[in-house]
Length: 150
Image (cartoon, rainbow, N blue to C red; front, side, top):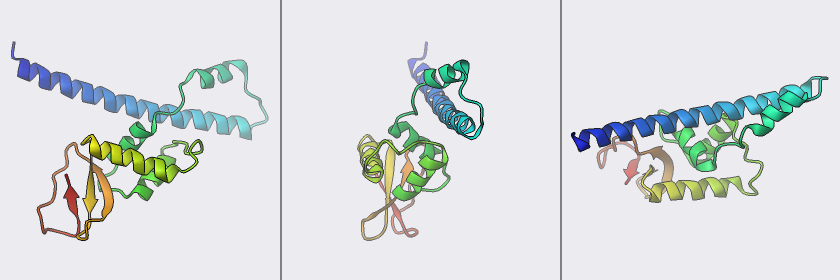
């Protein structure tokens, strides 16, 4: 048995499953919000079966997974404010956070420290955007406006 090949296969499969779970979590959140909206717009109250279904679905995916989902869905690096807009677009509720921008910045800082996300900096060294590390090639020094900070 070639353990290196098996390790690569297992790692690839794990990554695929995590991505699938994140897509499913996002869809569940969207459907849950849609159902709540339909209930509020209709004259029909929640029936017992519908209420049970909505309540049995776990709350939204965590902020970390949601941020990674937004970054994964983008073909270009995103600023923190663009990530915040992306979270709203996928139906992730930021209502439970007193300062959602700070939560997003802290999450991004943690993901950078864990080497899951890279900062994109301008020539002055200021962070202007973020990108997932997987599958991204950093631009060469001196090429283009921004430089990816490893």
